Image: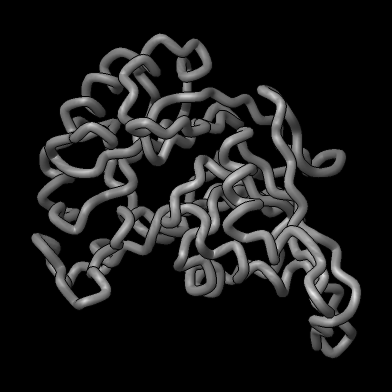
Length: 267
């Protein structure tokens, strides 16, 4: 059974354009410069595993015709990765034959996964999603993952390995599955020593700008990582509005590409 990954969003915390209409250096005529906040989805049969629930998750799922969410894995607790969690409500309720949803009826909470701190902060910020409040049932169930775990049933199962890395002072999770790694926010060059990141088909990695900072990789760091880890394909994500798609693409070696919203990968 085929496994596919879709980059739902590849923008930084403000996306491109910003909410005030500012495009930065992006050519607004190029649709690949329209970047919603970072999120992705793994699809295998009926198994749909969401990576992060960005503030733009509703339009991302609609744009890609996603009708089901089986589970969610979170990279970390920042708002641009988590603030769309409440939008997952329709996936947690049993629909009638007419597809109408009774939001006061029974729910089947979606399992969400993250490291200890991510889950702790999600439950604090979005407590109303995790427990029954008044007449509203919970929509998600919290789980702290093991280093290796699997999600899905039988031949639709996805096997995950994980690494922990730094995103400034925040500990983030990188997910490895089907010879693919997803690490959307990172500033930790120690990842070059991670055996889990060797021999990959795809390395999807943070590249905020041509120059990095204390919480994000920039282009130089990404090219160094590419040279050392040698993935077959490196895909740059979490891209700032100061970076134009075509301008950045011209700076890259053959195996490195710039992500865009809706990019589909066959794993």
